[in-house]
Length: 163
Image 1: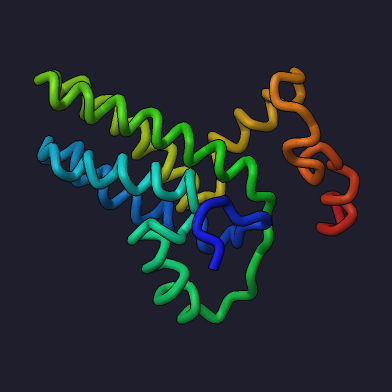
Image 2: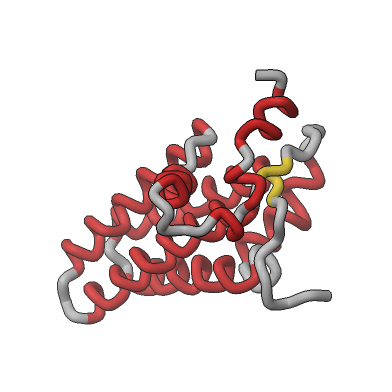
């Protein structure tokens, strides 16, 4: 079993389910300000950036229990933008941990509220804010096309979807 590395492609349904778990966890932190919640949130994001669902308890719950129980066909989507989005979540939640430990719990909750909004967009609407930023950075040449050949080749994705 490969431990380090991010899957490519990623099942869109699983990604949305993980995002729903993030909504619950981050929302609970925003409401309570209980620091262990934001620590768990940050560790989960870091685990998913490094290994996808492999070392993430939330990722494991989704891929081993919740997703197999759903009668929905997998929807493959490129992995690199999803990993980038997880990286943004890891950065913001780690910053929130630092803020909370420094006593700036209000600021920490504000940062996590932004994570909650992004995760809600992903889970409820399938709108991955981090993926949109990834696409924009590719368009500007900041992220090379070689990072995600499928992302760069929009024509093949449009043909596959019939658009």
